[in-house]
Length: 186
Ligand code: FES
Image 1 (tube, rainbow, N blue to C red):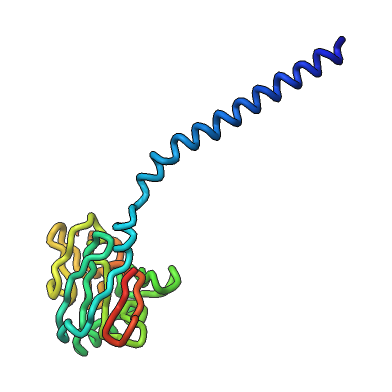
Image 2 (cartoon, rainbow, N blue to C red; image 1 turned 90 degrees about the vertical axis):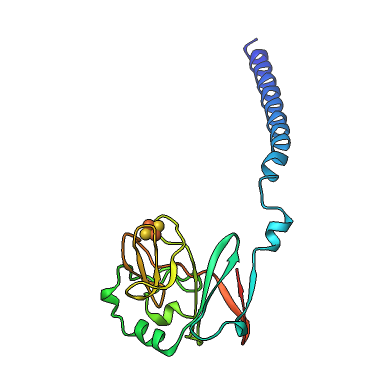
């Protein structure tokens, strides 16, 4: 008698579990299209990289391009801009980390780690102040880089924050040279 009850209980449990499992799969199948449609569509993915023709940027000029909806500053630095950035001691920086997506996360914020590899005149940064997200103004401020008009943060000619309240250097997006005069961001 006791054996029959156990067998019935086991069979009932199995039916419960099987029904529950089918229900869960059905619910997931129902929900997925709603989740899936929140993913970026093909037109957004197509914009995931942006190419910039550097031959159009004069020495000393900063141009702003758009990448994934963000402003990217591309600066063709003069020798003077580079020298000023190189002369800064790491100990003088508010943020000693390079913030360069192309380098290890703990790379120090030397000018070499901020500028383009083997092409130090090019500086490519995301043009969003690391304080509260305003767009800083180029060729401004005491440190010859950018000045953020919202709360007065200043960045130097390597895009490193030199006066707060911004806590971090302007981040450097992933990019690479696809030719001597063209970079691909993203
Ligand atoms: S947003 Fe730039 S200083 Fe506040």
